[in-house]
Image (tube, rainbow, N blue to C red; front, side):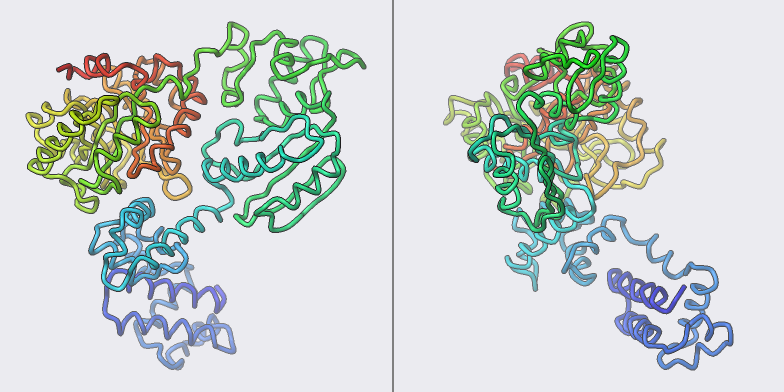
Length: 571
């Protein structure tokens, strides 16, 4: 390790010590040592070898021991002990630009927040700005820092990429000469994260469209510009590519650049098996191109039903398209209600009536109010008395609003042993119970699975909330045998959530086919903490389609009376 590496390690130890609230003099000792090592004119390794490290000003016996260990082994026991003693989420919070150890500790000690997602929610809910020494502007900067962190890890949330793509698409469609234009790539396939934006267009004026593309709002740098392809980098850090072709080529190019690579490989093989050749330029029989007006015609030419873009992952969609079409895939219009939303009773930003009116405005017939239970103290979790006070408000709202039914729900914490945060007798009084994990994410796979299976088997649990606890681009889901959990849900009749929050999109779409095969109902929920959050449902529907779910596989496509009957809560 060179001087810079050693200095960085010492600085990190100082940061972790400050995060733990250890003695300020000890923290400064490591900070000062880091500065001294970085300023050394000779390699620190040579000082260690000569036994002269203690001659450096400010480096005492303890630091000599730590630095020697680091130089000789590449590790430092003091550092590892600190890391092991700090919740993993706090270390992630330290990566947020502008958020130092002292502020992270203040947030953790006062709000109990230990992950980036919880911090974002607390900022949005106004809890952070109320902390001493923070304020509204600081909370806004923290949110900006979280966005920055998530946007600069090489991948971007589907919601972020889709917003960029739709803005670009709308602008380009206004340009003269455009015939057809679509967003392609992993965005079109509704992948939960993506690296870039791909746009495919046919135009009578390719040069003019290319010029418009490089002048799109948000373009930071042009990295390539030719006759058929233009590449740029956006201010968000995302790359965007435009491919322009003649209109007769459009279906083939759109299909090719929609992908996935695995899907395209299978399609090319299918073409070869039928004596044809498929590529981005066309479908050919010999030297003659098979005319296809659109992608539907392209699939038909290969003896297949149209395969929706969401399914093009090379995971059995070809075989399914041989047997029939995909017309039954769930869509936004199928959803009759939105479940699992939060209000100001816990950590939401709007009251019961505001959330209900907003849901009614979106065309929903019912809404499930599922505020946190008491164990979620950081989220202002409800005691039994506060729940009953909320029920009185829900009764009032139900009398006032005729277009929507407000369900009395709760998001009850699954405790470490699989027990629930409220007693069974009380849970039996709710219309709807969502059970979720919000703590102890570091259990072994066996422990975590046993914990969740036990909760799923509770007869009062209707939906398992965000089953794996993942936070996209921020935190992996906890170790879990998801298939075992699905099997338990199938046995107990418990639904599993597909959390539509773009930071979660959990349950992962890759497990939805197995859940469907086992007969487990999926509830597409926004987990909305604000009126704006209700608009996230579309992200969940995209993932449901990607997992091959049909209308009847989704819990909240049923009318409210049928839903309550299914939940064994019919009034």
